[in-house]
Amino acid sequence: GGSGGGGGGGGSTQQKETRTLTQITPGAAAIMKVSNPQLGLKEIIINVNNPAQNVKISVTKFDDKPAQVSIAKTGKIYKYLEIKAENIGNKLDKATIKIQISKSWLVSNGLPNDKVALFKYDNVSREWEQLKTTYMGSDANNEEYDAEISSFSFFAIGEITPPPEEEIPQPQQEETEIQPPLEIEQPQQQNKT
Image (tube, rainbow, N blue to C red; front, side, top):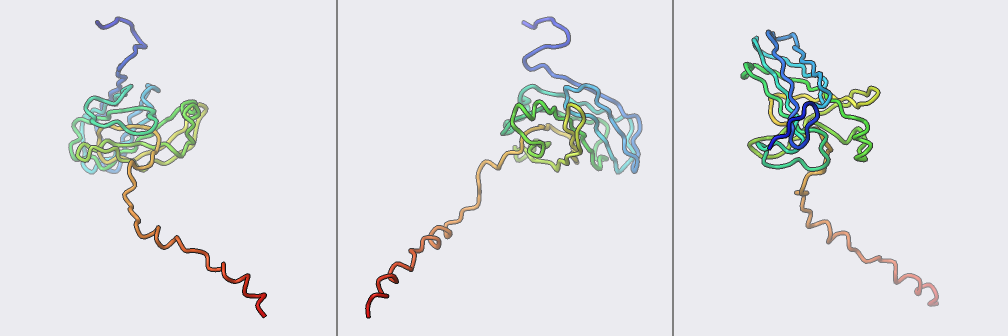
């Protein structure tokens, strides 16, 4: 059964924030401020290539991998998020996501501030794609980053991990490296007179 309880909640509680941007025009960025610090975002800046009206943007945080995502992101995860936009269609030029990562989370996970990024889940390849994430500085409690996206989907803020398999077979390397040293025969030759 579901427990009553107000604010906190455990398990797979979702935290969600929604805003409607009445009018977005090309050349003028629209900014959605995110007030809930649990979401790990400070704001979303949206640029369009055609005018859009009543664009509804929602950000949902998941405690664990969202059910619609078939594969978990490797490494340490700060937040799983879903960012959705209604009434924007193909008018989105790009959006900049301003991310905040708690310094205490980085410290407790042993991660330097340049080893985290925003990742986007690709539904087709079923892979987490690392997005260009730029470190912007910090405030008292958070490290701040900008990441640029071209479409909305499921995202993860988390550790930059090496790719799962190295696909660079180098069979020829090993043979050329094993060369016996050539200087063994010299020392005895000098005493022969």
